[in-house]
Image (spheres, each protein chain N blue to C red):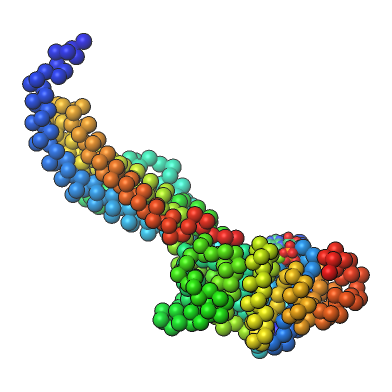
Length: 245
Length: 238
Ligand SMILES: Nc1ncnc2c1ncn2[C@@H]1O[C@H](COP(=O)(O)OP(=O)(O)OP(=O)(O)O)[C@@H](O)[C@H]1O
Ligand SMILES: [Mg+2]
């Protein structure tokens, strides 16, 4: 489903991703862990092409983007539509209602009529448990509710893959569960997901594979039980001992 | 001191009443026919110029950026009065003659355009990067993200400073008197030059401006309360 080959990304002279190779199969949930600054967000942002890689080949659902040669804006736009992105800080559109946040992409990008878009938004908001809040503005919602709207907004575009960048890190502890529950449901429905998170319980319960990134390289990967209980690399051991899992 | 002898004798007060009743009509007519239309038309055109100038200034195209910067720099670095004189008295010497009112429209539009472009540019830059990214992440391109996500939010941010610009413009339109536009202040000059009651007539003109600006500031307050209610004090997260 997703294939990343030789992905490189630098900011100035700082190499943030050094030749990352990664495959994610259809319907699998991959959790990405690693120390701060190791390149986790950059990896997801490259998949969504919010950052332009300096090299490497990305391929999702058969569509390819080769950054070893020049890439057109149009190709980036089309590729971006394959992935849905959920940000740590939600980034909801504050001037739009909950429904508006979900319908905006449908009408503007997909060209749906207002009526069709609202219908689809209602289904999605119902799915994330926000049917009762569809006319509210983001500032009237709790963090957990906002993040669920953000998930609905991304899902509305029918992405092949969902990318989550620390979706619960900005939330009060009592609100984390409601967001994770929505993500779990998605996983069970067979959505392909790449999730950067510090929620180790979620990783253990939901992930098919855990990937440990340090300093821009994938240090180790494996099934959660395997990687958490029997890490092979020293760096992984050290990182996990700091997390106390 | 002649103050007591010529100041407020009963005859003088009587005269003021006559002047007031005969000149208030022309003053208000000047406001309705020229001051207000001039301000509204110039502000509308100026806003359009301002949006394009602001976009040019934040664009990745060097040439566009340079053109916009030079325009803003020239307008902000020269007196409005001089700009009006160049258009109305200067251009005819190279064969371009423009009537007073259109000259004023051109001058004030260009002027407002430059100042408002700075306001709009700052407003666009104040929208968090996460808003652009969220827009891109659901597949929008630059112009869609700009029109649907960033500009609506920037518009709300820029309403207070833009209303101030508009009120400033209403007052600045009095400079159009110097290029023969028969607006409020020019009417006052004409009236005063006939009856020599400069103080009284100019105060009346000042009152006309004040009433207009007072009404505008009330409208401004209403709009701001409304916008706060829509966007919420918390604004954008990220
Ligand atoms: N736009 C940018 N410009 C310059 N440097 C950047 C930029 N984005 C990220 N970096 C740098 O790249 C490195 C990796 O950043 P990244 O955000 O991918 O880390 P992360 O693993 O997500 O960390 P965290 O757990 O703190 O979110 C960091 O050193 C960061 O400072
Ligand atoms: Mg990060």
